[in-house]
Image (cartoon, rainbow, N blue to C red; front, top):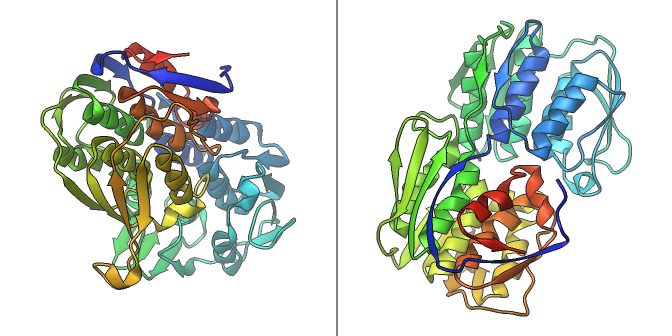
Amino acid sequence: MEYPKQLSIFHPTGEIEGTIDLNRSKSISNRALIIQALCTEDISISHLSDSDDSQTMQQLLSDRPQVYDAHHAGTTYRFLTSFLAITPGKHVLTGSSRMKERPIGELVDALRKMGAQIEYMDKEGYPPLEINNSENKLSSEVTLSAGISSQYISSLMMIGPYLDDGLSIHLEGKLVSRPYLQMTMDMMRYFGAEVEWKGNSLHIGNKKYQARDFYVEADWSAASYYYAIAAMSKKARITLKGLHTDSLQGDAQIAIMSEGLGVSTTYGDDEIIIEKKSEPNPFWEYDFIEQPDLAQSLAVICGGLGVSGLFSGLQTLRIKETDRIAALQAELGKYGIFLSQVPPHMAKKSGTEYYMIDGNATSNSEAVIQTYRDHRMAMSMAPLALLFPIKMDDPGVVSKSYPRFWEDLASLGFVIN
């Protein structure tokens, strides 16, 4: 799909009604693809995400090249690191220029402690990697920090059933993004793996994955942009297909989070209906440690509604596609919204970073939103177009997780040029 270098976006009425067949979860899709590649039987996956990340993962696992290029896909890169460590042969795992700036050291250290042969080809602690598996057996126990990206831990979990003695992962410190580990565990169990979570340890038996048909649910992270649209609208009723109450995704929490911002959720048969029901609370507080991918959407909602927000649990945002805290500060600031770190001596809890959202979004016809090659920056900022016309550079970044995003917005009455 071809995208222009810049879009102008506005909504003529501010009233929203429509139905969206929401894109499928790339987090679930990428886990399913790794499990499918490890399983010796045929697993059928329906409704696979059409995101760049999932399509890249599917292509690499199908082609099995000597050089695996994950491009911008962080999840793909991290999951393949462990997968290739148990795949016979010598492999190169590389990515885009931004990927080469994203740390991989703690996952590599953990795999090396287990006996994997992995070398850095350039900068220590960063991609690209040379991974050489000469049939060496990996050990069944490893200890690593619980404060790292949950994708590192999920990456190790998924290869556990294919180690001779299984794998025990011991986590030290405060855990981040717990729902993503729960998602990994639930999917592994669905495919027959033996996984136990006791205290700070995950124990995975060596029972191999078994073939079962698998259906990929829609993406709750993507749903957050429609919650933002509903919150900032004059009136809204939006049906989102493919979502349900019994979700694998921690970002389903957006339904509860949005109640205090005036948006209700009604659950149907494989769909939800979201509506603007009331005015938002004047103050809104949340710890995003378990749902970091929702932080950008909620920052824009607060700024768009003039709600004072107090955010914590944002520490993992600095190592995403961009430094998302710095990016939000720069782009929201163009519209009179300020994201500021609370001085440590004024923090509610010692050792916890807090950020305040202040201000009320105001039009700025000279401003152009920069997306920083980050899909979530583009999609989270887009709902501001309900309040006033906006301009956005590099709108094509949405293809990383949601290629149809702009078409779906147009179906809700947004004018996009």
